[in-house]
Amino acid sequence: MFSDFYFKIVCSSRTLEKFECYCKLLVNRSVVINLINRKSRSQVIILLNHGNFRYGSYMPLCLVPYPENCTGCRFCELVCALSHDKVVNLKKARLRIVRKDIISDIPVVCAQCIDQEKECCASVCPEKAISFDGTALVVEEEKCTGCGLCEDACAYGVIRVEGTAKKCDLCGGDPLCVKFCPFGAIRYEEMKKENFQKVLSLLEG
Image (cartoon, rainbow, N blue to C red):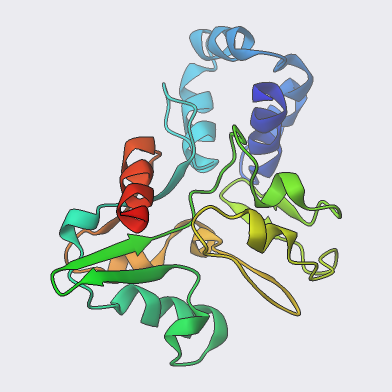
């Protein structure tokens, strides 16, 4: 899984085309580390950063929720709906704010389940219409049949089907929900599974 995933990252780089020749060499983690340790180390770091990776972790960045910081202002939903659908309709947002009580609001965001440790939108899609583009799991609309299996599989309820599936694409690597959140309730950083577990626990509580 790691080699396939990293291969996609390498191929997604437009500015470092010469690194495509290394694709066949990247068969496991040790090969990647050896490549970094050689003379090309600095350029590989550039490649990792360009491909939405941080050197040393090999983990892509994603939206990470911090429910303790959420005030329920819903700016994130507003800017998401405006950006993707050009409408002022919070139901069109590709994330959601859930109000549990008068003082508790929970930001629920797409986890970009690229490790696929459990069933997720990409793994259940019969048409393989959801794939990693180097930044996020995105929907290839020309392949999507609108069957809804991805919507059913999403543990966070942040995929909807309106003709085709609609999900978070991380705004191409510059997520607006993060930029417009005044309280740091959603951040763009390496996956923190404990934060997502906390969100699920709060939703179930």
